[in-house]
Structure formats: C-alpha cells, structure tokens
Length: 276
Image 1 (cartoon, rainbow, N blue to C red):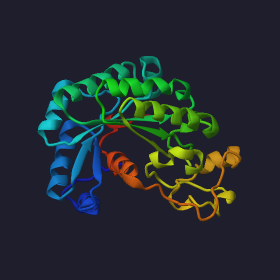
Image 2 (image 1 turned 90 degrees about the vertical axis):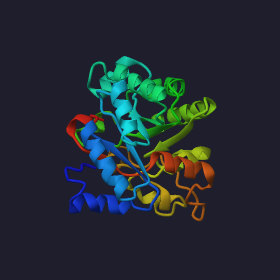
Image 3 (image 1 turned 60 degrees about the vertical axis):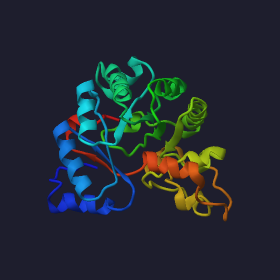
Image 4 (image 1 turned 90 degrees about the horizontal axis):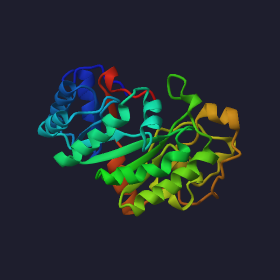
C-alpha cells in the first residue's frame, strides 16, 4: 500500500497501531531518510520487526550499512530472473539486475538478513529454475515466488501467467530451492494447484472464486483467482478439494514461512516502486 502520510500523524499511528503486538513485520520501500523515520516510529510503537525493500536501483554497500545502523532487521529484495536480460526487462531499468545482485552481496557482507521474492510472470516461467541457485549463492535466508495477477495496476495482464503452465514450474523451482538449503514459499496461487506443496503457500490478498470453488475444502484459506483471469479462462484449471478436507496448512514450516514473508508493505516514494 502507499503511505503518503507522516508516521507521527493520526493515519501513520493507525498503521503502526494495527501492527503492535502482532509479531508481523513491517516492510518499508522508500529513500533512506524515509525508511529511517518510519523505522524509528515503528520501533517506538512496538512493532517487532522492520524490513526495507530496495527499488529497481538497488542499494550501495554504504546504504546497506546505513540501514543496518538504523536498526533495520533485514531486506526484502526482488529478483525476476538469474540473468540480466530477463530481470532488466521486467524491472524496466537497464542495470537493475547488476544493482540487485550487488545489493544482495552487500547485505551478505554486512550480515543483514535477506529474503528474495520473484514475481511469477508469463515471461520468466521457463527460466525460474535458475533463480534458487543464485539466491542460495548470495546467502539469502529464503525465496518466495509470487504469482502476478491480472488485476494489478498499469496493465499487468500482459505478463500474468497461465496458471496450469506456470505453477508447475514454480513448484519444481521451490523443491530445488529447498534442496539448496532455502526456505521456499509461494504466494497468490489457488491452493488446489499446489498439491503436496500446499504448506509452502503464504497468505496473500483474496481475489475471486469460481462457482465450482463453493464447496472446496480449501476455500477458507485460499486466495482464489483473479476475476479477470476467470473471465478469460474460466475455471477449468481448478480442482476443488472435497468438502471437509483440511482448509489450512499447519505445522512449523507454514509458520516459519508466514513469519518470513507476510506482513504489510508501505511504499513511501515512487522511486522504490517496481513496475510489476
């Protein structure tokens, strides 16, 4: 969400108050000064963990060190692919891949914990398998694949993937990530498409449901499918679970993934925003 408000004002205090005592992390995307102001306010409000999300320009080693000195608990870095052409195309900025990998290595040198998110798009599906190796090589703690929805702003439907094609590639990549020692998660996919890897799903905004989802045993914890996607492709890819089947993935793995990847995200300036 955008947060063009003063953290000390009523709206800012409302945002921070909703997080107090929940254990959720607050992720901040903006300039160093903006992040430092919000981080201090979050600490004063009792928010347990505060993270920073670099924009397409990445962070220098000095900026990473400054964030650590300001008391940030870690970084959430976006990486579209394991090579420059694909990442830079998605990021809309030449040199963004070089900046992202430099940020990751600077965080490792500063011993600042990092997680990486890769949006799953129509264009990066078949090169996804190479990403876990890079993420592990730079010492990240975990990796999340996030399905791009049609309803995101600025016409992102052009890059939204066909679920039956893309999700299996994502699941194969998650298994490879776990073999490399990473915690691996997926967000934004209907739970019925995840099979035995359902406990790798992390909470994401609820979208829409097909009529056939009405009796699905997974409905209570499922994000569903983008409404525009359903209008284009109907519900033929979905396989609703039997009524009464356990609706939520539990256990220590699911909790660790929720703790690692969930929580509100505040975009404090346009420069920190990603196009996809």
